[in-house]
Length: 446
Image 1 (cartoon, one colour):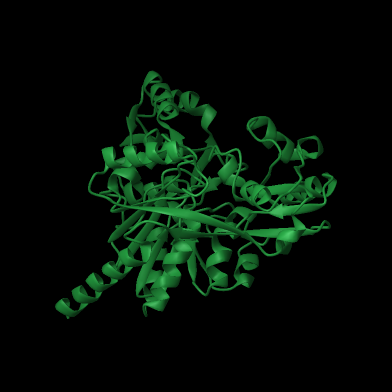
Image 2 (spheres, helix red, strand yellow):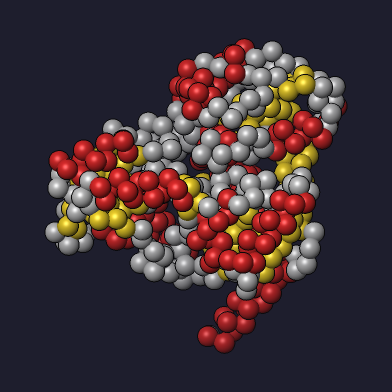
């Protein structure tokens, strides 16, 4: 029996365990490690999910303890199971594991992708913050108009009680409260829900798949954190970002997504430098010459531009995009510039608690506030930081309605962003062709 550590971030790691190691007598997982997400370490992957080989569950420890645990537990194999990491940092981790005496493993898709009984479209990206969410929403809407009933399965974000979160279903905004969702979870689920799409997420993606198949006739895998799909896709769409040229070939597993894609969407070409669009286009063609390439704008809008024009604004951006996504700005900054804000206020002097620590960890951030809310305490600290930052108006560029989750005492305006294909084939044309192929397949197999 080989002894294993799984390096993770409360998502892919649990799925890899469930598909590769649960009930596998040839391996014994001594621990998961945690990074990227606060307050994950110190918990236990519960016995209800871990299976009969683990009556006490599996401990989740800090990644910095890797070498000590390898030596103490006589670990044979270290399995890497998280995403949005540079190739260089990935190999630094591999070097640490090998130097401590363990073997190193990167699981491939063959044994971790589950086969669905209904068609699957996957939407993934090469980095966090590429603009994948508006692509997913657009696809769900188009599928409905074509007569299909899409159901969304979202990449995992299990930040609470793991046993209770094994299978989560979100069909109304009330379900977000029922499942005690963090801001990060609400950002991904709420936009689908308000458009009438049921969303599934959780921990056990085999059980999730069985339930999702009962509620829709086509499944939309809404990927996260530039991870690869958990389900075998029939149409694989990957979004790349010319605001970070070169990242599409220097991050894991983003480059894997790029090389696998059937369709690559180069998003945000309306706000990126032409030379950066050209760089990304060249890299896409070099890595995946057979892919269909769509260039798209990400159109930014606000419900009342007059609230921004000539005003001192505090810009609140999507948290993960700015943190492990590595961006220094997002749609909120674009909106502030587009609609004529006189000044973007720097919130750093007014940040409190974990929000202040976020700025210390990510020094590239200035004049933007990442919407961090992984816990009630952090949500309160975000609220305090907004309250204490002097400004005329708060520009909220999070996918979720932050005014619904926080008690915002200041006037605020929401930013929306939608995808708009500007080259052919358009995404609608690609979807139409795919749907016709699926309908023909149904007819010929009846």
